[in-house]
Amino acid sequence: MSTDLRRRVLDEHNVSRETAEALDLYVAQLTRWQTVKNLVGPATLAEVWQRHVADALQLLTLAPEAKRWLDLGSGAGIPGLILAIAGRGKTDFHVSLVESNARKCAFLSETARLTGAPVTVHNARIEAVVGTLSGIEIVCARALAPLSQLLAWTEPLLTSGTIGLFPKGRDAAAELTEAEDAWTFTRDLIPSRTDSQARIVRVTSLSRVDP
Image 1 (cartoon, helix red, strand yellow):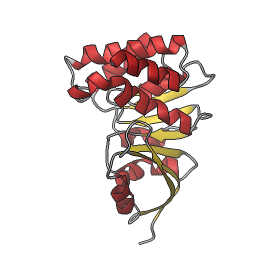
Image 2 (tube, one colour):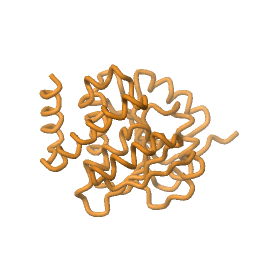
Image 3 (cartoon, one colour):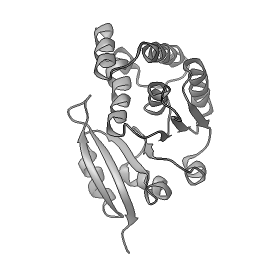
Image 4 (cartoon, helix red, strand yellow):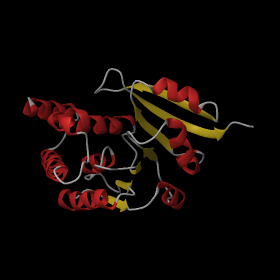
């Protein structure tokens, strides 16, 4: 079943042989590191190609021309490191990964080295990094924080032209309602390709609600 899922995901996203090999290496690294560092939910490893790889790759279809990405709370590299592996053949493609946990950063750095993924790993808190980066086209984060908190962290970017892509579960609509109490923003709620109950919140044109 895992082999069938792998082939389906690679075919759906038109992945080259070289990129497929790099994604295989990512999955192998994730499995190996999982034994010493709980990077993902243990039960999800059996469905890694659908639950993690495909879930990350779908973001590329929403911004196919973007080359400068920022992934917050990267953890196991989902989606940021996977995006970098998939985009490594594109000229000037680069993903900044922000992760405060040093051991997770070690995983990200080692796996990026082995796969040739074009990333910069920032072992720091989000607040210390976001305001220092320029030229970011897309900022993303998965399973990190409620949307209202993500907007607060990314305000310097989303108020200056960066687009936010935030995968959310079944509570996406509730998180939007909460966020709209403090923020005004243009948004789309995009159905996830990997989970019928999940959505990707695309955010642009952010501003604070007047008190």
